Image (tube, rainbow, N blue to C red):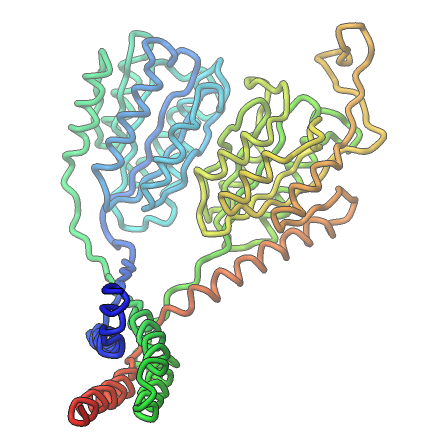
Length: 521
């Protein structure tokens, strides 16, 4: 009985009115969430990191130590554009020249010996290719850091021609020899001819100090233009005030006219009346971005699609890249595990070159682990609803429930370009044909069951055809995804908000009603 009497004695209208006034005052304080967008620095260094990825770099875990030291070096130079190139049988551009240092965090764990071959060391060719990475540098300071444990064994580009190219482009080369098998006089010649310096590293600790020493090179001053964009948050306390006013109508019906007037003004304020500034800055549109996954498994060697499923996949992937000019695209290969072919970049020449240099002779091609590709694509996510296009024959699975669950959880939009035929074909195995343990010829067919992965993740499923209609369909789908993303981002514009012109009279009505109520009492 006492509790009931106490409850009846509480003046709910008073406390609701206090809550509404508090929310309006919070809204009038104009709470905002700040977002800053910085322009790229327009001076500084351009750096190309060249890393030997031949089989000998396995010794003493040189390759792994070098990767960790490179990661540390990249973080120490936040204002520079940096590229990463591996070389063994041939050069392999892992990361094109970029300011985006997060690319290195994503890419380095995927780099391994074998991605550019294992047997040889295309040192001269790697240096010559690296010189072309600075094409857009103009008058910027440029240098290369080359790390190797061997000597050039690929006679594609003469050393004399390579040095001439580097000197012409005014590129300094810092050479680092590790181990005992490299040619000191060659590395010293490359360095001194380009006004660089030669270093000898006897162990990983010494290697770390060498990169630090090179890192002490004086950095040029730079300027960056940072714009602050404010996302207004006043609408949230105002909605709370609206809820409170509706409750107040129930508990204080004697002043319903005043409360309704306050409610009307608050609702008008929630329409967010505003005027644009004279110089209105709109957030820059986010470019189209996607990842391409190419199946590298044994079944992709089948020639039921001419000249083979893999070669056709590479050709169709190249056509897709051409249909998306300006897009930021990354390429992953997969078989038993995922392999990084090209880190996300806007440089489509790099992407085409990476596709043309795909070599599956040094990787484990047994199996088609599609879920490993989907998981790896999360590490290279570039936007909220990431697009992934998979070129595959579908593997052998009949159920893709785990694939769909993971893709939905991580907001992946997956499109599939299905290769192979229902009739199937044989898998070439060196000079013969692949057989099972019983001596029967293995026939590999396309697996249309993978279609469900696309339909359940709002992607596009297409089957290979002689025309480019299927690829065009996927390209249009990717563009539509990007349009939705850009519409969302356009909302963030700098405006002069006028909501307070309506919140103030709403607040005054409420205070007047409270004063009138007290006088009446």
